Amino acid sequence: AQTVTQSQPEMSVQEAETVTLSCTYDTSESDYYLFWYKQPPSRQMILVIRQEAYKQQNATENRFSVNFQKAAKSFSLKISDSQLGDAAMYFCAYRSANQGGSEKLVFGKGTKLTVNP
Amino acid sequence: GAVVSQHPSWVICKSGTSVKIECRSLDFQATTMFWYRQFPKQSLMLMATSNEGSKATYEQGVEKDKFLINHASLTLSTLTVTSAHPEDSSFYICSASTGYLNEQFFGPGTRLTVL
Image (cartoon, rainbow over all chains, first blue to last red; front, side, top):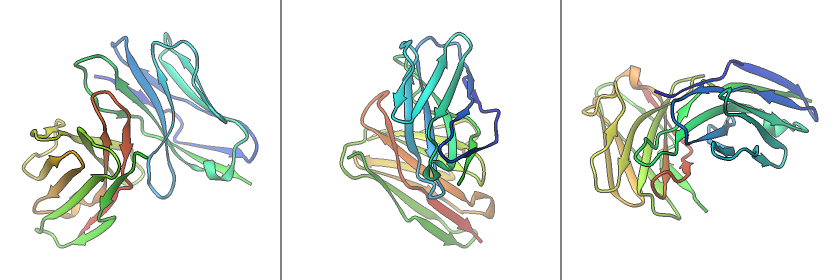
């Protein structure tokens, strides 16, 4: 079974600074997707960024970028120029991409990010 | 686009009663819907996966007779918590996707409190 580990229960960053959230995962599959979701106090899950395992290039979405190290099974999220609105719980998630595989998302335990003004 | 709604957003009920939560895809057809449960300060745990017109597939440890899931149309799935007890109090979130291995879009969640 696949597992996702987020080793940082809480992180804090100063506004306008950069922060990196860590995520490692374990799988025997070769084809999969990795995601970072944001859950603000409203509890609405918001997709931040997604990475296909077969792509070597790291995904980027504006101020959000990932460092995907497939061999190390590591998938960290970097938030640049942090804003107050970035404060939220961040969940790393895994999903199989194999035909016939499970569609379910496997989530890590989350990292609570605080942004200090 | 890709909006998913849930109703109600919060509900309080007495122990022993049943509660139904609706999950609707507003602007797309959802062939698959997922139901998650999230306890305070914890992660999301998948309860079950439902495909339109088929029986739901439950995760290990989830009581299918207690958490009844119906996915009768391409835009609506319902979760019924039968004979609810205080330990069922939680935040229930649904998500929907347009097809196999497509992106999941999440609803805003329903907070259930059982007294």
